[in-house]
Length: 412
Image (cartoon, rainbow, N blue to C red; front, side, top):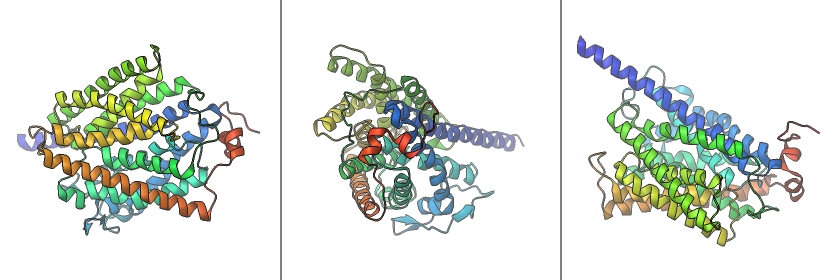
């Protein structure tokens, strides 16, 4: 009797833990909207925030009607899941799925994974800011989720060929950050530069929005990483610690590097970007390394991601908000670092050259695949419909020309 009561208490604790983790990940989407909205020019702020928020509805419907099945349905050839298995909530209600959902209701696992799907492509809006119309963004979002996110997530998390090879990604360094950021890079190269693309003259218009957005991202990231345990356990405590340690280390070192790079001047935004770089980098490794490993990964993220941001500038890529350098290369770095710092005491993965090779192969494959498919999607959409913003729209402001509104709430 006592054992039964303890089991019930443990189960309810896990459910409550996953409720909170799901909410924390959801909070990151409006956080991203505020973060990006404050970083762009005032005349384009509402547009980029709307693009992020629209993903909640569009991706939500895709997830319900086939998306979840394509990721977590029965594996078909290592490439995709059975699209009908969980279509429109089929086989989800009142079910405990022990393959994916541990001891939590399977529909809660469905909701937790939905939050990851929602926030993925909005990450790239910061790279290709100001260059896609609202309609163009929605069309691209639908095509990209079906052709990139759902297959990639299945390869790595749903029993696909990369997972079978031994590739691991605890919370989305490759599934989310690499796929979205390299998609952003492809979009930048295809769509070209903005009319006004001088980053030195385009300072963040609202640092208050940036601060609120960054705060929500930092807050939500604990659920983003630690929720991957699917239960309230000792391992979850280690993951939360890893998340904090990597972010702390990256924030401090990034701030120091930026201070000397900017002529011995502090910046409000640089510590925030550094913290996000640390979080993006530790994300795939958070469930496989000890806090000491997370500390090293955080320090490396500051060095590597800062260098990649400067490299992108040197290459004259118009990555408006440094998404490729921070999220893309951070996610790739963290994915490979699993092979360097994975500890079997934390999880079953052993560090070594073999694991490094598998991790590097998987991350590069996803990056290349995302870029190629993005080029194809944009090329087709660009030739059958209007997806690009015009020179006149960019100069006058997308909020006014696309939304007939401004940040101040005025309408013409």
